[in-house]
Structure formats: C-alpha cells, structure tokens
Amino acid sequence: MHDSDGLNIKGEVNILEGNIENLVARLIECRKENDLLRSELSSLQNILRSCKLPGTVGISAADAPESSGGEFSFAEKLQVKQKLLLILQKIEMELRNDQTL
Image 1 (cartoon, rainbow, N blue to C red):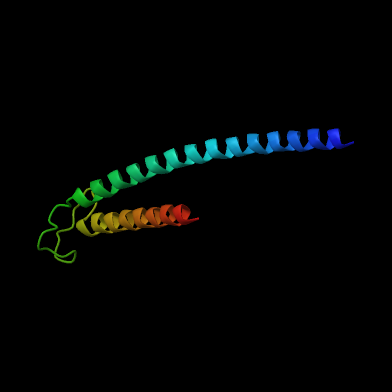
Image 2 (cartoon, rainbow, N blue to C red; image 1 turned 90 degrees about the horizontal axis):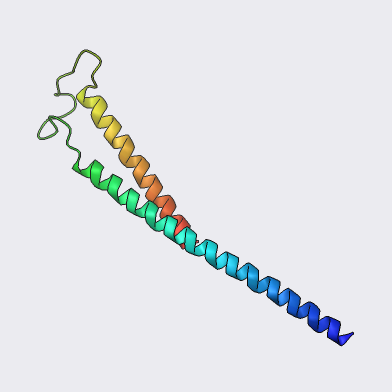
C-alpha cells in the first residue's frame, strides 16, 4: 500500500511539474506579446505626437477656417487627434494595470 501511495505522489508531482512548465511557457509568451504591444503603443504615441495639423501654431479652433467639399475642418481634426490620444492613454493605463497584477 505504501508503494502505491509513493507512485501516486510521484505521478501527481509529474503532473504538477508539467502544469508549471506550461504556465511558465505561457507567461513567457505573454511577456513577449506585452513587449510587442508596448512597442506598438510607443510607436503610435510618437506618430500622434509628431502629427501636425495644418494651422495649429498660434491659431485656435474658433479662428481656423472651415473647409468645404467633404474635408475635415480644423476643429474636427483637432477633436479626432484628442480622441486618439485619449484612447492611447487608456490603452497605456490598461497595460500598466495588467503589469502590476
């Protein structure tokens, strides 16, 4: 009876070790994916920061000329840029929250 208990324990330990190896492999993959997402987020932030809307220097949205013919107005372009920045900030906060867990 003691021999069968020893075999059961060894079998359970082997299963546990296999599960740990699987978890470690998944963790490594998640870290790689997280690094890739951070890199993409950083690239998107740099693109948005470098994005210069026409007439943004020294002109307010109220003073900007409205465009016609289906193009976006200055105010609309500015609003889109602000929304994109907010989205990127939310993504960055989510990544930070996931990192602390």
